[in-house]
Length: 207
Picture 1 (cartoon, rainbow, N blue to C red):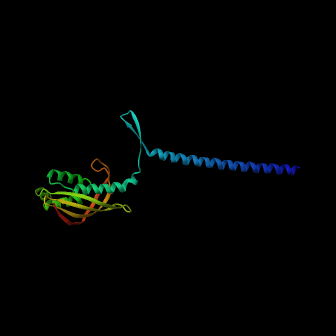
Picture 2 (picture 1 turned 45 degrees about the vertical axis):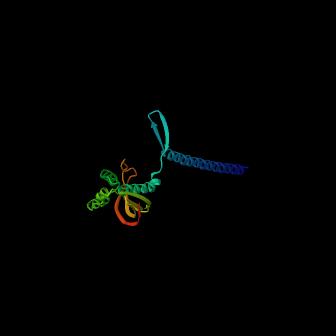
Picture 3 (picture 1 turned 90 degrees about the vertical axis):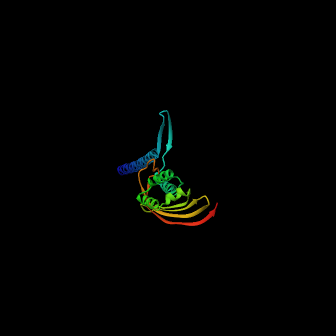
């Protein structure tokens, strides 16, 4: 009888230990789940920006991951530079305005091209001949596998004269460095080592 009581006590303790272990495991799972859920909630809250509109209304704007948008910003940066640097009108003030805006998007390699064109009288010929120069960027290929990023641009130049229109191919290569954003450089890139690989006449059409 005494041995049976001891056996019952031992089995009761075993059941209590099993129940305690199960309870501790459940508490651990609940704690881990609560911590994980809290972390996810905090991450989602950090993606939100609250904007006060004149101190009266409250607007909720979801912030975007900048890394996801960088390729599109890089292509737009290169495209905008080419439009400003190679798209010119036969007015001195307009040429200087566009070139100055373009040079804020690039390093001295673009400035050296500008000086070289100016010394050869390229801009003076545009003005004296009343020639418009338009640029159409066909594609910008960016390689983000290594930093600084490499970009190659394929574009067409339209040299518009009173008598004819000449179409030229324009292929350039450059590197992109990250830089701080500003009103003059909203995409936060700087073009380095600009190289004109090709710039030749394709056809000429009488007007």
